[in-house]
Amino acid sequence: MELAADIKLTDSVEVSGVIIGFLSLAAGTSGTIERVTDHQDESEDVREYERLKSLLDAYGLDMPTESRRQLEEKVASLEPAWTAFRNGRLT
Image: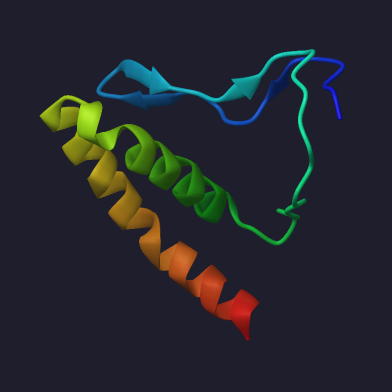
């Protein structure tokens, strides 16, 4: 598969007024589709948890201490929605 246009995968993440990241793929990027995930049943909190947790896991160690702490707090505040979603999806 090759992308015909740029595709934004996440919105930018802002912590303390500073944009710390976003994810997109450029047109012309080639690859193989291994899995398609349907996000229709996910709430906004679940999608935000997945996005922020991914950023924290990927870049948390390189972030300034205060930014990382704030991101960890935001992820923790969204974790109940994520847990409820996962429990509902697995049953």
